[in-house]
Each structure stands twice: as C-alpha cells, then as structure tokens.
Amino acid sequence: MTTEITILAFLITMMLVYWRPKGINEAIPATIGAVLVILGGAVNSSHLLDITTKVSGAAVTIIATLVMALVLESIGFFHWIATLLAKRANGSGLRLFWYTNALCFLMTLFFNNDGSIMITTPILLLLLNSFQLKRHEKLPYLLSGALIATASSAPIGVSNIVNLISLNIIQMNLYLQTAMMFIPSMLGLLFLVSMLFLLFSNDIPKTLPPRIVPISPRSLFDHPLKDHSSDMKVSEKQMKRILLFVLAVRISLFVASYFHIPVEIVALTGSVLLLSWRSYALKIKPYDVLSKAPWQILVFAFGMYVIIYGLNHIGLSRFLVELLQPYISDVFHAVFIMGGAWTILANIFNNHPALMIGTLALTDMNLAPPLVKAAYLSMIIGSDIGSLLLPTGTLATLLWLHILKKYRFPVPWAMYIKTTILVIPLTVLFTLIMLYLWLVLLFL
Image 1 (cartoon, rainbow, N blue to C red):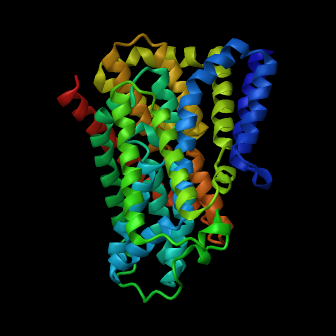
Image 2: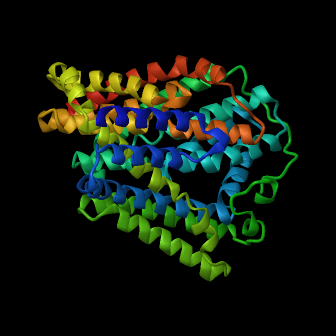
Image 3: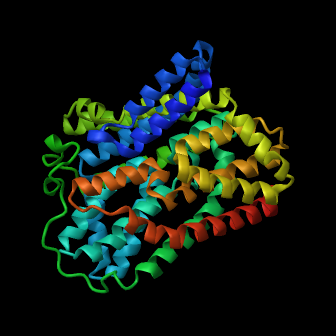
C-alpha cells in the first residue's frame, strides 16, 4: 500500500505542477504530495529531520539571494540596466540580442534561474515594447533569453536550489563544483546562444526603430513592488556601488565554500546589509520586500524532497542503481550515460525531482570518487540544459510561459519545441564533450 500511495502522490504532484489549475503556486501540490507520502508511511519523523538538514541551507541561500534581487528591483536597478542596454545597442537589433542574453546570463549568475525569469521577462517585454517591435521580432529575444537564463544555472551550483541540495547530498562543496564545471558549461552556453543567433537571424531586426515608451517601473503595470519603486531616487553612482556590492557578496560565497564556511550565512548577511541600506538611505521599511519574497520556494523544495525521499524508500533509487551502475565503468561512460539519461528523465519528470532522485541513486552506486563527481556534473548538464527540450522540463520554463501569458504574449508549446529540438540536444552533447575533456585534462 505504501508503494501505491507514494507513486500516486508523485503523479498527482507533477500533474498539478504542470497544469497549475487557477494559477496555483507549485508549493501547494508539493505539500499535498508530501502529506500523502507521510501518511502512506514512506517517510517518518526521523526522515523529516534528515530532509530538513539537507534542504534548509540551500533554501536559505536561495531565499536570501532572491531578497537581494527584490531590493534591487524595488529601487529600479534592473530598469536602469535595461535602459543602458537600449542605449548601448545604438539602434542595432543584432547588438541588442547579445546584450539581452548577457543580461539574462548575469541575472542567473548573480541571483538564480527562477529569479532571473521572474524579473527579466517583464523587463524584456518593456524593452521590446519601447521599440514597438512586431511579435515575430520580439520572440528571438524572449525565447533565447529564457533558455539562456535557465541554462545559466549550470556553471555555478548556487544559481539553482536543487543543485545546492544535491551538492550537500554528495558532500561536494560549491568551490570545487564551480572549478570543475564553470569552463565546460560556459562553453556550452556560448554554443547555445550562437546556435540561437543563427536560428533567429532572419527574425532579429537589423535596425531598431526609435524608442517611444520609456523603460521605467511606472511603465510596468504589475511591478512587484510598485508602491515604492516609482518614488525612489537612486543616483547612477549609487547604482554602480550597489552592483559592486552584489558582486562582492557573490564572490564571497565561493570564498566561504573554500574555507568550509556555510554559504547560507554569507548570503543571509548580504541580503540583510542590502535591506538595511535601503531602509537607512531611502527610509523604507523592509516589510514590502519580505512580504513579496518567494517563501513558497522553501515549501516547494521541502515537499518535493519528501516525495523523492519516499520514492527512494520504495525502491526507485535501487532500480536506477541496478539499471545504470553496470555501464559506468570509467569517466567517459559516467559523463555520457548519466548526462544523456538525466536529459531524458528531467524532461519526463521535471529537473527538480529528476536530479534529486538521481543524486540519491548516485550515493548508492559505490563508485570511486572521481566517477561520482563526473557522473554528478553530467547530471547537472542534463538537468539544467537538457531539461529545456520540453516546457515541462523546468519550473523556470513553466513560470516563463505563465508570465508571457499574463502579459498577453502567449507562446504555444509547439513554437517552443520547434526551437529547442534544434538547439538543446546538440548543446547537451557539446557540453558533455567539453566536460569530459576538462575533467580528463585537469582533474583526473
């Protein structure tokens, strides 16, 4: 009975996450599924304590990072950046393509993939509307920006909550993961954006018309912190100082990891300092940001991990071990078999549960440490990049589609897949090759 209830809980959860009836937050189905798993007996109180230990640090880090992003959004920081990009494009649609993708990449690198999608998608719409572009001219910027924003969580583990949780499980620190993964995944991202540029070259306007609509928080009818954002006066000099502060906090995460200091402490300190600065300099209490912070991420991550823990308890992990372990005899097979397998699993089950169950299975395979690291990093590529093949592969993609529909720019699934089927499989293969060469040359 426990097995049937656990499988049913997983299926119900994923169905509700994909369907999102009446726009419900993904934390609700994750909670429903978790409760069913607990009531079914697959997870007990001692398991819940272990899950809390594994999830809490990653969740605090991500929430603290998103709080920083909301503070910056509340003072018009990203609108300021978008205005700079529009000016630097200097009338060139091709130049704007590269600038907008760079913005999406940096947003994920500095914050995380979900935060990048939440903030940059409305701002990109504002930016493109300011040039009065046609629908087919807007799509290359929006679609490529979404793919780059989501895939950019691969280079550093701190840009994706499930990556952080998995790091904790396999006892690999953020510093080492970045050292082994940053260069291969960056080459993969360059490959991806280059393919997107070639694919959309006929739709990207060569010359941009003059901007008509201003890019400002006032122009966004559903600004997340609209009550304050239009009244704040922050100078360009202050904006640059804030940018340097955020960069310093981000670098500090890796320094902390190197010295075995919990990265959540650094992330939390950075968000508190930024909130305190805003409260002191702009005389605005932190309640608006704290109330808008996506606390549901904590609930979603915990609920999903309870469900995955339950699936692991009823034998899914053992099944994966028996299926894959015989074929992982060396680094080459570890990279390409696990990377390929998790590209498929992430698109079927979504990258969050796929990577969670994969990491648990990996810890049970009794592989040599180099093979564990190689297998895990290739799973990240499959989970963060390969999962983009279908809209159901990542929550960030589902969120992106929801935001576009909300702003009356719906993108059909067929149109999305028509693009991704041409670029994602080749990008995954290229990135796995780069990872294998990088590991063999420098780490093995």
